[in-house]
Image 1 (tube, rainbow, N blue to C red):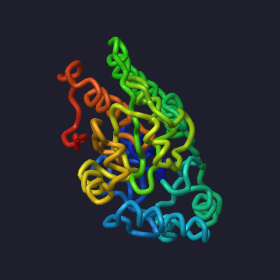
Image 2 (cartoon, rainbow, N blue to C red):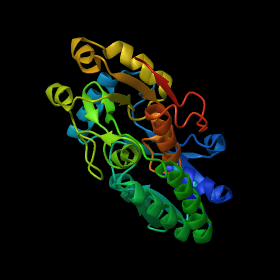
Image 3 (cartoon, one colour):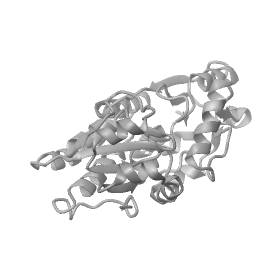
Image 4 (cartoon, rainbow, N blue to C red):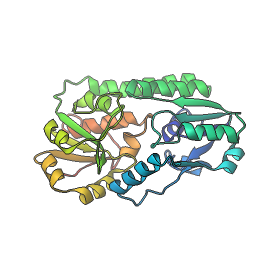
Length: 298
C-alpha cells in the first residue's frame, strides 16, 4: 500500500500507527515527526507566509479566496512518482490544507486511481473517530483503537479532578481577531469555561466589543500555524489600545498552536495537558508537557 497525506494531522496519525514506511508523499506543512520532512512533498502552498505578520497573511488569503486563486499547488510529477493507492485529505477548511479542488486535481493526474479518504472532524470525539477511520483505511484498525484508548486514558486522568473553571478566551488569529472553534472549545471545557466560540462550529471573526464583553479571566493566543515564539513576537507587533483594554488584569498565554491545537490529530491531547498546566498550574505541576509548548506573556 502506498499512501499520500494531504493533511499534517493525517501524517501524524500514519506515523503513530507505524505505517510511515508506506507513506510516499506529504505536504510542505507535514513537519512532525521530524522524519516526515524527509518524505517527498507532493503539495505545497502557493504563498510563503513564513515571514509575514498575521494581518498580511489574512489580507492575502482573503484576496486569494475572493479571486478563486489556488492556495495550494500540487507537484504533478512528484505525485505521479509517488503513485499512491490512497490519498488522505480533509473536507474541513480550504485555507488550512488542500481541499476538494486539489483532490479533484490529484484524481485527474492519477487517472482516478487512488482511493480518497476524507477526514472531517469538527470536535474532539470526531478526531478520535478520524484516527479509527485512517486505521481502517490502511489496515491498522487494531493499532488505531489502541491509540485512541491510550489518548482517552490521558484525558480521563485530568477529568478525575474537581476543577474550578475560570473563563477562557481562545484566539485563533490576532489581527483581525478570530475565535478558536471546532475542537478547541471541547479541549478548553475539560479544564476551564470556554467563552464565545461553540464546540464543533468553525472559527469566526470576532469584534472587539464582543471580546471586551466576554470578560475572560485567561486569554490564550493560538494563532493558526504559529508556534509559541512566533505568537509572542506577533503579539508584540499587534498590541495596541484595544489589546491593552482586553488584557487588562488578565493572564495571557501563547501556546504552540501549530503542534497542539490547530491540527486534529493525536497531539490535541497534549494540548489539553498544556491547558491543564496553564489553568491549574499548582494541581498539575508534575504533569509533563513539551518544552516551549506555552509561555505566559502577561
